Length: 303
Image (cartoon, rainbow, N blue to C red):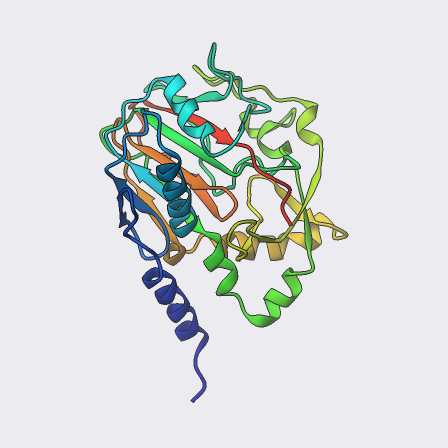
């Protein structure tokens, strides 16, 4: 009997869900969705962690793609210290860091601000760089009483559920990325943010190339690596030629079945693997304040 593509896709998602670990030596992981994400209990990340705990957390990140912590109390120096246990930290090219802590950027939208929010589109962080981020650590300082959730999408599943023919074509493609859309001279971030120092400049016009299908350097799994914020076109293709396929890939990669949704509370932390997920910050809390602190761990050249 010929199996439908829907059945194949469902089986792929099911096997991924059941293969995810929940028991670790130093803590437990509680799944938040069938596609990705786990909440970690029993770890205070404000304190120095042993090599064994850090290794366990790194494995949990690889297993679940994004891990969450509740009820943390982090000073800026503590967030930096936690993040540095997983690699060197990057400073953002277009958002000025906190005074005295250039590795931390404040993502803040005041209650009286309207319009766009920072990160309110499906994306992977800083893929305009030659070496995009390994991951990011986001800490909730102030949250609205409702709304402001963050969505995450599993890009392994996005690739694995494509047809064999589409995979074959994408495996040979290179995409061109830049920060022109959000941070170019006429970019979306040109508007004034009330309490964020965001600059737009010609630096954002610099283009870099990355494979459309990325092999994760630690797991060896393939995942889609294009996003609507930074991916402009395919190498050797015009923008008009690229648009239909990119539009399909952006839509496919953010299907609900590939996602999890995180409800923020003060003191919550999300730590995601930028090499295998996209994320989206919802803008549904007009009239309320939201402030996050983000540190970004430096990555390597995608292949």
